[in-house]
Image (cartoon, rainbow, N blue to C red):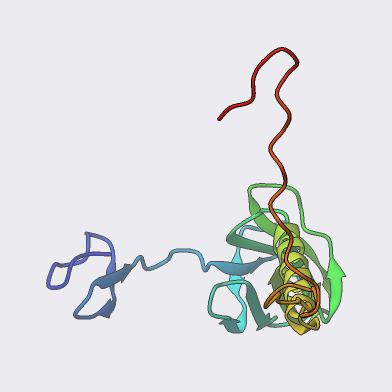
Length: 173
């Protein structure tokens, strides 16, 4: 990526020239998601490769008879699921997402749903349910006192007499 108006570095060509930035690509660079033939480093890109906004779902069709090794430049973080024709394929361990695809597979889907995301989704749902229950509860009944509970026929009380003075001491005057 370069600033608007600046040329691409040597060995690359413009892929996007815009008012905000220029994106450059290297001819011959491996595709981000590709299928490597068994026993070979030859790689082919998936056909009709589509990525959802956010990059958490990729899907594409396999050319030819299918099979081979799916190799990507995507992080191999836990949470990725690889599906070949809708059936789960275990990802290979490593820093990048990869998997051995069964022969005859015609479609590949990559889904990213990390466990903390699902736990956060559950916590948010529980919080919303608790908030809705709290808002839907009936209002608390409170009584407001507006006066004395005595009837009008009861005479008012006189103030209590002061405490008695200790023995041997004269009362205060």
